[in-house]
Amino acid sequence: AQKVTQAQTEISVVEKEDVTLDCVYETRDTTYYLFWYKQPPSGELVFLIRRNSFDEQNEISGRYSWNFQKSTSSFNFTITASQVVDSAVYFCALSEEGKAAGNKLTFGGGTRVLVKP
Amino acid sequence: DTEVTQTPKHLVMGMTNKKSLKCEQHMGHRAMYWYKQKAKKPPELMFVYSYEKLSINESVPSRFSPECPNSSLLNLHLHALQPEDSALYLCASNQGHGRETQYFGPGTRLLVL
Image (cartoon, rainbow over all chains, first blue to last red; front, side):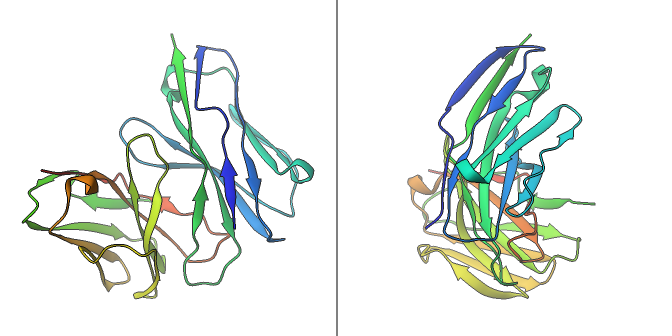
């Protein structure tokens, strides 16, 4: 069975500080996909990034960067120079390769990020 | 365009009412999903439709009845709900493969009195 753990339930920072969100996952699949979503108070889940299990290259996209380490089953996410608009709940999620019949996303418990001005 | 729309945004209903939630996407996606999210919890999968056929039902009570009239539309019919069914109901879509990102709508906030 798949499992995603986000050990941090809430993080509070002051604007312009960096924020790193931890995500640890468990799966028996050799091919899988990892996602980060942002959920602001409005409720909509906004897709941020996707990574597949056979590409451990870490990247930066604007103020977002991620660190995927297969050896430790971790997929951490960093917001650089945080802004008040980054305040939201962030979910890490895992998906199997699956068939073209719909795939189940396994979500972590979420980390609430509060950025204070 | 990665837009999924949902109506209504908010819904208040009594336990004897019948109501429906609607979801629409025009991205040509073949799989559509219903999730239920309680406060301070992650979304939980309810149903998946693939090519307009129900492919996954996560043992959801029969008072929730999904329907996929065509490849762009997904409905969730509600009848005889309980107060504990109050939640945010999210719709999502993708091409169906695990490698495909699911794109979510803004959700419907449901309150059952």
